Amino acid sequence: MTPHTLRVAIIGAGPAGIYAGNILGKAVRDAGGTIGIDLFDTLPAPYGLIRYGVAPDHPRIKGIVTSLHEMLDAGTIRFLGNVGYGTDLGLDDLRAHYHAVIFATGAIRDAKLPIPGTELPGCFGAADFVSWFDGHPDAPRDWPLDAHQVAVIGNGNVALDVARMLAKHADDLLPTDIPENVYSGLAASAVTDVHIFGRRGPAQVKFTPIELRELGAVPDVDVIVYEEDFPRDEASEQFLAASNNQVKVMSRTLNGWLTKEPSGASRRLHLHFLHSPLEVYGTESVEGMRFERTAPDPANPGGVTGIGEILDYPLQAVYRAVGYRGSPLAEVPFDETRGVIPNDGGRVLDPAARPIPGLYATGWIKRGPVGLIGHTKSDALETVTRLVEDLGNGLLPEPVEDDADAILAVLSARGIRFTEWDGWLVLDAHERALGAADGSAADRERVKVVPRDEQVNISRSVELVAS
Ligand SMILES: Cc1cc2nc3c(=O)[nH]c(=O)nc-3n(C[C@H](O)[C@H](O)[C@H](O)COP(=O)(O)OP(=O)(O)OC[C@H]3O[C@@H](n4cnc5c(N)ncnc54)[C@H](O)[C@@H]3O)c2cc1C
Image (cartoon, rainbow, N blue to C red; front, side, top):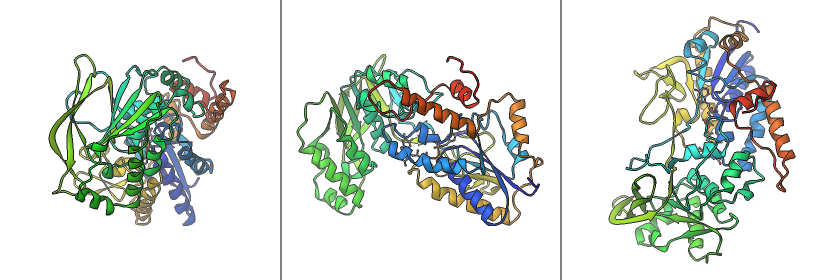
């Protein structure tokens, strides 16, 4: 490696970080340059929310991993897992070893639902439940599933994922990659009714049509909707007529369920609209939830307003699925209001809104937790374009260290058991072998390994220590 090799660190091995590395590597090589990219993640395995967010019964989405795998396998990007920025490495370390740093740390916390009672036992954040069912190493291994009546608050796809995972019978999830503790937890669930609540009307949902339709195909689960939640006034009809195709398709799906007789399934998924959450109530734990009914607001097309009618639902558990939120990173500016790193097209901005040389952001930590995996690609292109412009204009600070392996020595000296790409290939093969060896009738593609130490040990091919 020559001293003129561009060296870039990317923090976060989710889709945003991987796309950024791939686009950047290609751009520099196409321009005749040489580049070394280190992709760090606090988790021992790559792929971010694709591994730890996307629902296990969505293998089609997880198929995106195939193309991300090829990008990481190509050799330009060096994966370094089990390394946390802000804990194992700081900004000074990165400044010393790299010309530029791209933060792609995503958003893993739940946004707050600002109503009383959300601190009661039995009220959960969707992100925590998602981490549990997707086998995140830092999530608890057990999840309380003793509630019969459960509410999921929110009208986006995460609410649908959470509700579907709660309502689905565990055996129907066996062909997926769910870990053993998740299978046994779900198999013991007492749930009979899952209620999804949205503040606005059926024409304002943030679902996508495929995910909504999927609810109607869950075995032994009836979908129930309520006529009083469907505004039929002229303004609402006009709003629907002026809406995009997706909304119209979903409206047809929802209206179809209005006339469908329940089959007598053992579990039910109820979709409630025009319910504005007021409070979660209970003394020791969740006993129910209070809502105010809303109606379309004539002064604000698509908006709703409370109409004073109070509705109580007895429940034993509530899941808040009202959005995700980014977390601040040490020594990096953070916009507390939006939960993102302040940036201009990906260039990180200081409090005076000036670009900080050599620092960039991409993905959900750049623009907030909205959008699908595909959006992180266009996002990465924008950020990389800025970085390449700055490189061309001589704006990237020179690191003191030009040996690519010097950072590995730093990690080792700190006792950090980092994982590498070859290690992921070993863990990947191990999980697939667990799937193949599974004795159940289901054709299991993989069974995820959950504990961090076990993942690290397998990746580093160290003798297994029982967790
Ligand atoms: C529940 C859920 C379901 C979803 N389902 C779908 C779906 O079906 N289809 C779809 O297209 N999109 C889906 N999405 C959206 C998709 O997951 C996101 O668009 C995408 O993952 C955002 O990519 P990202 O790389 O910005 O963040 P992430 O995927 O979150 O990746 C960020 C990475 O940064 C790492 N990191 C964080 N902090 C640090 C640190 N301090 N040091 C080192 N590493 C760090 C994290 O461990 C993580 O690996 C879903 C999202 C959620 C939450």
